[in-house]
Amino acid sequence: MIRAFRNLIERQIQTASAQGKLSGLEGEGKPLPDRTGQELVDPGLSAGIRIMAEAGAVPEEFKIKKELDQARTDYASLSDEAERRAAMTRIADLEIRYNMARDARKSFFR
Image (tube, rainbow, N blue to C red; front, side):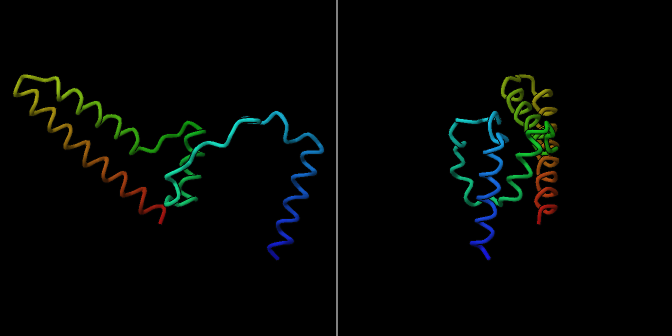
């Protein structure tokens, strides 16, 4: 069964190549991207995130992570104690929101 499936795929690739459907594709002639370190990542999750990224859709947790990183950078430059307290409150809020969004995504993909 597996051999028959492999042969079917090979025939379809050869047919498409003969018809010119495989020429002019994005990335043609370039090496495959280096994906080392992704051996332990769920392939379905990885494909889903890649498709979302290519479509320009960004999961909420990524947006919150950017805000969190910016808030931490801003905190480092503050000198007024009241501003530092307000910035720490914002950082704590963003950390909670980030963890909730990350946990929601993980539970969704289970």
